[in-house]
Length: 126
Image (cartoon, rainbow, N blue to C red; front, side, top):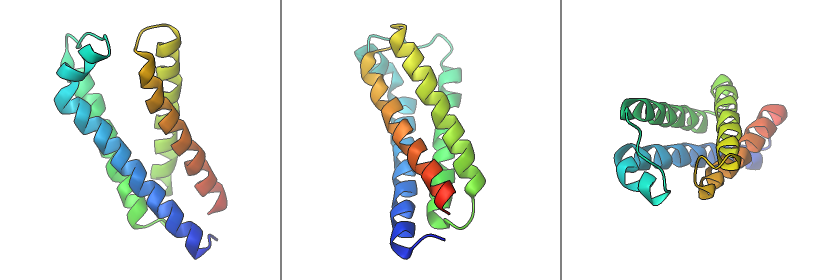
């Protein structure tokens, strides 16, 4: 069982994870036409697929918020979130290494990698 202090720390971490997902998804959802050219990327021909993906990123942020609200429950959301973030780390790293996206986007992968580490640590310690 977690100490009260660790439980508070993890609650904050899940809250920040929710905010992280919401900021990225909302920013790109409404601003991808302006943001992508700044990254030397073309907006997609069929933007609906990008928007659907961003919608899912927003929804998993709601899941992280639920975990924040009750860290005793919703552990499967943490597992799914860790898998999704691992996918982001792998795909963004591959896209950066193959020069498909601007290297600055590796920052998002690093952020997700940090959250993965904390998610796994939480699941092991709980």
